[in-house]
Amino acid sequence: MTISLDDIQRAADAASHLTIRTSQRKAPKLSARLQTNVELKLEMAQHSGSFKTRGAFHQMMSLGEAALGKGVVAVSGGNFARAVGYCSGALGVDAIVCMPENAPPGSIEATREYGASVELLPDAVAAFARADEWVARGRANLHPFDNRQQVAGNGIVGLEIMEDCPQLTDIIVSIGGGGLIAGVISAIKATKPAVRIWGVEPDTAPTMQRSLAAGELVNITPASLSKTLGAPFVSQTALELCSAHLENLILVSDMDMIAAQQYFIEHEELMPELAAASTLAAADKISDRLSPDDRLVLLICGCNDSPAEVAGFAEFLRSQDPQA
Image (cartoon, rainbow, N blue to C red; front, top):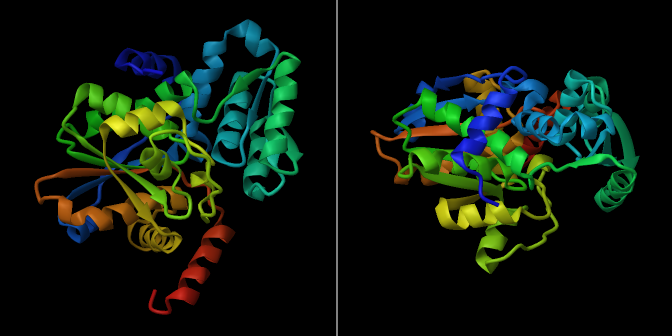
C-alpha cells in the first residue's frame, strides 16, 4: 500500500471541518534538558483524545452514504474505539465496537457516551470473530491501523507539523500497529526527505522491532503497561515504510515511559498517555545524536490514560525508585 501526498491532502480536505488542527508549541525546559530545540505536537487535544479520530472520520466518509447506511463495525480496546464512537456520533452513523472485556473501563464508557454501541467479548480473538459476523451481515469494517484511509488521515498530522516547524530536522513517533508512523513517514518523506524519523516502542511490546529484524510480519504477545502500544502485529505498509525510512527504532521500558509521563505532568502541565510520553523517553536515549541547531518534534499522540491509571503508574514508579 502506497500513501501519496495527494492521498493525505485529500484526507485533510475531507476531514478538516470535523477535526481540530491541533497546536504545536515550543518546549524551553525540554530544549534545555535535551540540548536542542524541542517542540510538542499536541495531538492529544484532538477530538476523542487521540490522533485516531482523523483517520476514523476519513474511513467513514470514504465509504459513501449507501455503505454508511448499513452501519459500521470496529474492533478496539482503546483509542480507536473512542474515535469510532466520536465519529459515529458526529456523522449519525450506526456503529458497533467489539471490545475485549479487559479494555480500560474509561474507554468502554467513553465509546458508548460518544454514540457507538459496545459489545464486550472475552478477549481480542473473540472480538475480531464477532466483528466478522457483523461484516457478513453487511456492516462495513473499520480497521484501527491497516487501512489506506486511516493512514492517510494520520498523515495530516505530519503535514501540520511541517507547516508549524519548517526547519524540522527530527521527529519521534510512537508505534503500536504502525498506522501513525506510516502516515507521518508518507507525509514528511514526500516533502522533506532529509528529516530523520525515529520510532519508539516499549521493550515489552517490540512489535515493529521484531518484524524489522525478521524482515517480515511477526506476531507477539505484548506485555507493556501502555495498552495503546500493545498491538500484536504491525501492518505490512508500516513495516515497509519503517524499513525504508526509519532513522532508528528506540526501545524504552515502562518505567522510562512513566517517568516521562510524570515529567510532562510536573513541568509541562500536560497529562499524556504512556504511548505519547514514550517519545520523551526515546529522546533521552538519542540526545547525543541531536545538535543545538536541530529542530526536534515530539508527537504527543493521545491523553486517554485515566487519572486513576496515571496515579497507579506514579505509585508503581515510586515503589521501584524511591528517588522518583
